[in-house]
Image 1 (cartoon, rainbow, N blue to C red):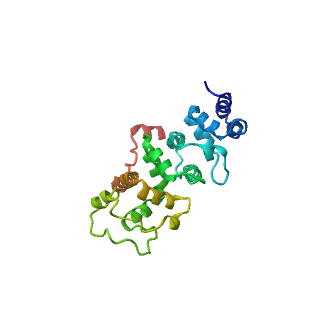
Image 2: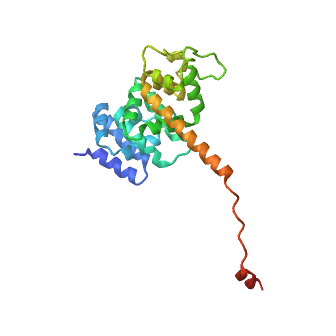
Image 3: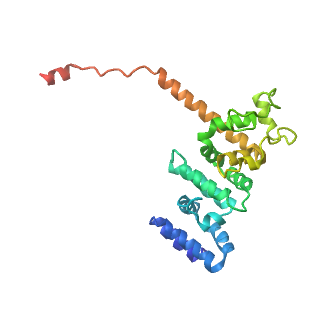
Length: 241
């Protein structure tokens, strides 16, 4: 049976009162404890959970962000693509506030996201603006374009480098976790590469495919013949008279 608090929160989301919905969920923690909310969120619609999560981030924290499980978060965050947020600002805020919260295992959250259909695309959305940085990190092990990187894999082809991502005996971290602990895209990219290498590979390939598609569209647009000027027929001439 759905908890009465969840029913109330769902109704508040429907009418656009996200703050009220969040308060309703938090009231469950206040009366029954943290675990009660964690269990209840299993029955809370993913789209409604996303609506609440979108209103809160690291700058405006919510108990929901602090307690949502990796699986619950994954089911909700994959729906973010429906909003068509080109800059992905809300996506960044939600992911950063949840997977880098105190005591959380970022790798566990990333694995849960990737397991859901469309999850890798969401991670690619998150890193879209940093595609060049991700490529540089993949090749050199560092994010700084002007810093000395790891040259131990210089002799490998691109395919061999991709395969080496999952080889525990190759490509140890060149940067330590403490050096990238920004609770943002660098830490997420580092965590993917060294804790979830298969997901890192998939996200990298998605970003490459998108880049190729964009280049193709630009090339087609650049070579397209100019639009023909409309011809003026006899009807137009007669109407002018």
